[in-house]
Length: 156
Image (cartoon, rainbow, N blue to C red; front, top):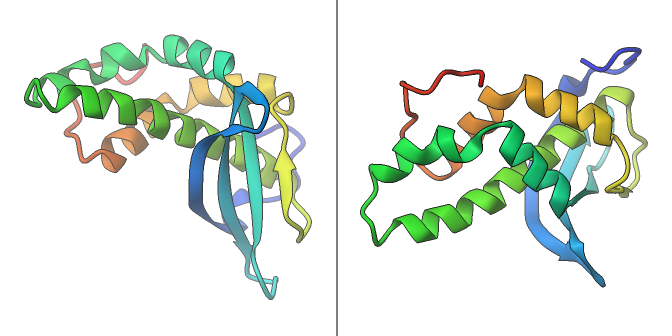
């Protein structure tokens, strides 16, 4: 949890809506959109979460994503691997954006559509992603219907 957090992110119901998609006119930015609902609200909101592609690349390397997923990918046929490798990039971006959204929700949000800019919560996201590698990896494997590799340690 983020130090000084006054809200509980679990009080929100979050659903992935779409993304990642390029942000207009900024090829180095991606955005994912989530629907967010709190029980006390009459209706939900949409929150667009932006992230820089260089931050995603840095997080992939810090999390040793390629190494962690290699055995699961090797279990696929050679003709299937390229498709899954392409999808891994998208699903990884979704997972990281979801972690960034969780950080914002811990601080609380108002009931209005909003955007979390790429330059917000970068340090916190780096720390959170490092602490939640297993959750990010499990999300990717679940979304792609891949079996986990039990020989890879959970923290590299």
